[in-house]
Length: 477
Image (tube, rainbow, N blue to C red; front, side, top):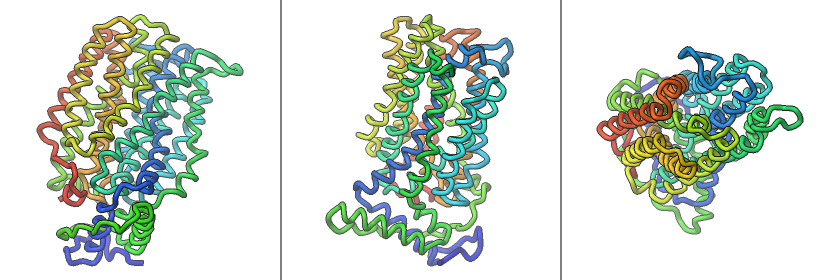
């Protein structure tokens, strides 16, 4: 098997490793969108379904945690660890650790191994969390589970961007989010049924959490269906493995396509650095400006996105809706989550990613401001659906966008680093939203969200590069 001569070596365009890596990329980018390609995307998305279930259960088990006496809705102090804000914060603290500290494992050990281990990690930790009897213990296991989720989300994004051809990236990410966001109405439905009840004497919120831990059952079945990223293998100098994976994929696609595959587009080979990823490369041009832009973006988008998504039932209760009805209304709102990605599949590769992000953030700001002033349940649900659609469109756009901005060999490391800022922001957003809700009401909450969206629009609109229908290599250089 071919391997790298030295870790971190910069090779010229004439190097056989660089040339083969370029050819592997070109062969993948020319593949038509057949059933085999979509099945790979679907299998990865199924793993992400459980991550999204966990990510969004915070909002829907919140009323049950308060009802059980384990947490209070608000606290007298800003950092009150017996309040629901602490549960939200524990989730995002774990996500921050996973994305910032451990996502680089996907660059070191590969996308497939990291994908499998992180899904198993989350499932086990979530199951343990379901049976804890104190706020501190729940917070601890929530943090541990969040670490696995954080690594998984970055790995899936990286994996998808490398397995699909360039003309399909936007739609592929929209499809992944369609499957992943299907978890949101599922968790909302389970919460609506179970949280107000105590089946077999066990609090309903515990059953909702246990359902989310079932990812451990499917993890090995998923693992057998996905290959390692051939782009990553080639960058690591594992050329024979990269060739084997690419050839197998081409054979399946050709069989389904029914005719010869398009000829790979010959591209200019460039001098690149291969071997072990170094964090310092993120701060070299042109990645430095991109990293700073995405750090600012992620810092503020999380306040807007999770400020609503993680607090839907609680915000409805604050508008005078009962706990039982708030969960029902929340289910209606949650059921709209898959429709944003479904809509995005029709235009995701025709509209610039940065344009989609800016327009989605604008929608969240406008509809959120209207939500704060209404009291009619029907209007609240309608505006909640519109905020949710904009939020999912924003998510589709930026998850694809940030994976495109960095080269294959440091993609997971860089994406994990910039994405970790959203986890850090979301961790404190739990306390911020609780504080704003206590002192300024729902109007204060959406004032905070609207301001965050303005910063998001400025960061991406003015400083984000264009990426649509460009190869990952072209964008990287």
